[in-house]
Length: 113
Image 1: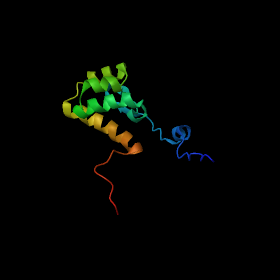
Image 2 (image 1 turned 135 degrees about the horizontal axis):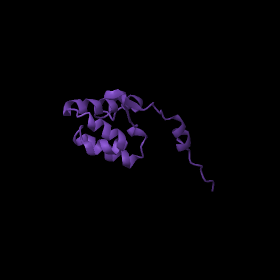
Image 3 (image 1 turned 60 degrees about the vertical axis):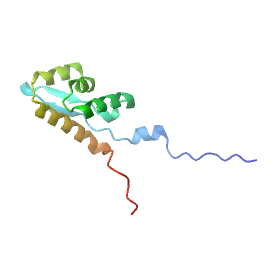
Image 4 (image 1 turned 90 degrees about the vertical axis):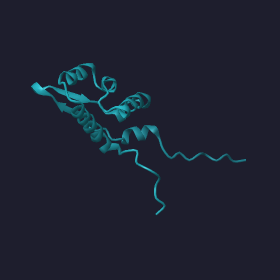
């Protein structure tokens, strides 16, 4: 009896070579300081889920920002004493920048047409 060889549709090795790797999102602070928001979509999935979960609850959540940013960058951003609105705008800009490379989760189901 012949055993069918399974068809491989995707190789993780090939996928990792093809996946977009955007430049980091950087924010200029006062005094010419720069901070970097690492690509959340490039993090290990459980680590990223934790940050995304925190951000979903509150876009200005410092717990999420301290997981996302380096300690030095989080401290520099906190020192800016941004309003909730300003901080939310910074976070939303960083997320939007990275979503350009992977897209958003979308809403609803695909249409039949």
